[in-house]
Length: 145
Image 1 (tube, helix red, strand yellow):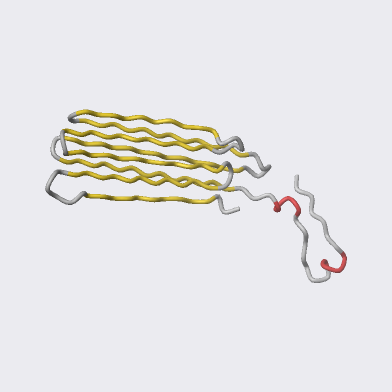
Image 2 (tube, rainbow, N blue to C red; image 1 turned 180 degrees about the vertical axis):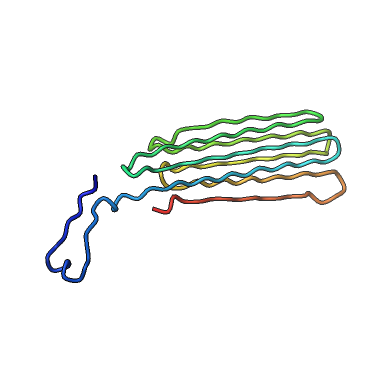
């Protein structure tokens, strides 16, 4: 039950104070992904996160990230860390190389608990004798508080 207060001077103008509305609610999600391929190599990474705040000020967050590489010698790794204030940071890297030909992808995702989510993916592929092909994708959103 919401308690509505009126102040006599403001009530004359039809204005009410709604103290329960001071606590807003909202959610934010973001994610990015990318793939690179060159010669017989390929690498892909993905990251996604979300955070929300309820009407009582409670928050919840999640983050998922991963990657894979194929062709030649490969390396892929992923990890997620808590920031200490309820936030999450995640990173995935994947790389494949065969001689001078290589493909790599990296995704970083940050979740600020109850506030925002950002995700960025960078990819690059290269074959000897040609220019590297690079790409960056960035997304983000806030809870609107």
